Amino acid sequence: MKIIKILSILIISCFIGRCYAQQEPQFTMFWNNYSLFNPAATGLFNKHYASICGRDQWVGFDGNPITVSAVYDFKWTKINSGIGMNYTYYHLGFETNNKVNLNYSYQLDLKKGRVLSSGISFGVERLYYDFSKFITTTPNDPLLPTKPAYLLNINFGLMFKSPHLLIGISSTQLNESESKRLGYKNARHYFGNCSYNINIGESFTIKPCVLMKTDQVSTQFDYNLITLYKKRYWLGMTYRKSDAIAFMGGVDIKGKYRIGYSYDHTISELNKYSSGSHEVVFALMLDK
Image: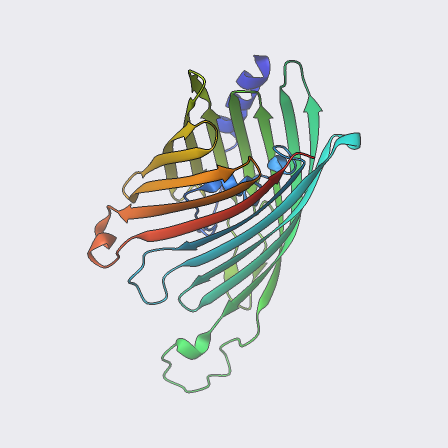
């Protein structure tokens, strides 16, 4: 189990650096789009995998966060690699963000069904501020930018997978690209995840999972527990400290199609103004 010790050390040492703002979008059912924040997940779980996730966060606010992601990747067995692409749309207030990433992973097969995967991705981000929604002292102020900015992003990650255990560490926006015209700089983000499958008899599986995300300005933990019945039906809960308690459920049809839904009940001061957050996922999982 030396590899697990090495990854644990990397998780601790990886979070040393300086960042500027929390910018990456949030998903409660994050295991459906791992490759958004860890390119090592590309092609790691299925021969072909595709998903679409949508999140309507803090319903009740004007300009509340709306996030949509689309992921596709496949495993190229001959070269022990995963290749894929993902897209993220994020809208908050007067900001609209579109990201496209191309992902690659190399998977080192170890003994007894264990795999160590390393991945890298390169992407382009289109950032646009709608300054027409600002109230300015000078109408049509020429100093306000009217064109979008385009930023380059580089992401890197590692994942270790065994029949029961999954551990990952990653960093997104490594190059901290910026737009001086918009006065905007991407912050380097770090992620760590760990999950374990516990089989109870032949029908039930319990899966505890933890996701940590930080930009070293703020750090957040998602504590997740899912119960699966016959590897088809699943129910779960997530606790996000000082933010939300989430309830989720879904079904995997014939091991190929997934439909899931989660509801976040806000437990912070925002619950006075928000009725919570909703998230849906549709996924295709093929092993041939």
